[in-house]
Length: 526
Image 1 (cartoon, rainbow, N blue to C red):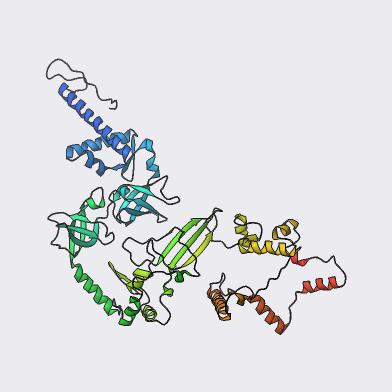
Image 2: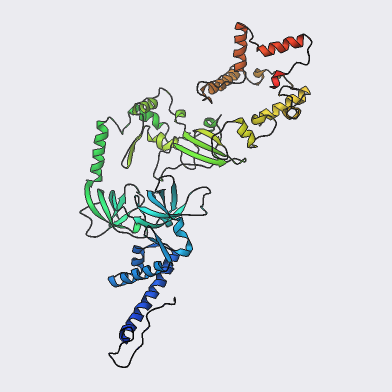
């Protein structure tokens, strides 16, 4: 109980006597009782706000209920604000000493699931993940006040809780469902949630009807909300028939031709084999995830993000390898070309490919082996894409030997050449500082590839590797990815036809050496 100062009363002799302030003993007692009640209400309100920031609506629902109680709540709130015990922001009351009002962010709910929500900052710059128990019954479109967690569960992510709902969006569209004998409303934009319909507010709606509703009573959870039908659109089956008619008019067919279905049936319950994995990178150790809803069946893309030992990042974008199963010129390929895309409408989809592929072997489902095309991008410590050797070298990502290519086979070849030729390795040349070719050693290794298989087998393997290189995307538009030795062969052919093109400076150096001038500058070190 807080100490209070109120007008003192001095009684005088006689029932009609009044004190020096014109207050009778009866009035003084009543005033004292009122002040006592206000002080008790102040304590209750302050305690409630300490635990959770509250709106006037929250406080009245907790401590009010009738006109007199609501008035006491407002009088207590006014006193607490006047004495700087509590403060308000956007109609939400905080305790001053908590400092939470300065951290509160104005947001809008943009996505709602069964156990989560996403809110967007008022300026649209970023979104914040809200775990289910911190959503406070907020709905998509609601304007809310949010506080971010200082220590989110996922490092680097923005997570928080909704402190209060400032503006409610109570108009929703969805479907009526009968569950355990009761009519419930399932919103279109969050089908994992159902709300009870208030009696006498059902508007003649029946199970399966498409309706527009208004939230008439809000609870602490979305499932606790109570709704009433504002408009009935008719049976959802009727709506589906109308949608099908529109699709048919646009030559969009849900049924696939017989030949297409026959091809697709061969892939029903298909699994990835060891032969399918040959020549592919194994990325099963990566934390790969999708951002699709739990209801999504055709998951065709996924992402991954891992930290590199050097403090940078590796971003992976993974796309289902449909081309492994849909061969050029096949019935599936021709049908996909005709359809061009999947068509999404309401709560259904007309897929580009039959479900055996779109929902099966070509869907990146959790916990099963799948084939994909993956793009792995290296990012520097600031999150910027980089292929600059200097940036890679600066990051200490590699060993000195071999420079920015200094890993694996490059290091092995560098050391092997130095040992076999009794020459200098890359590190020796770095320490000498006399140019990359000073003291450089060369080795030549030859072997007969046909010792390891038939000519047809070896040549077939080589052809496949060359074809794979030719099909690769180059770093720069207009360039071409080549295999080792390809450019040398083309240069030799060009030199045999047109002669060897020698740089003027190099030719001058050769002539100087031929004349006996051995002090000629090594231009190769420039």
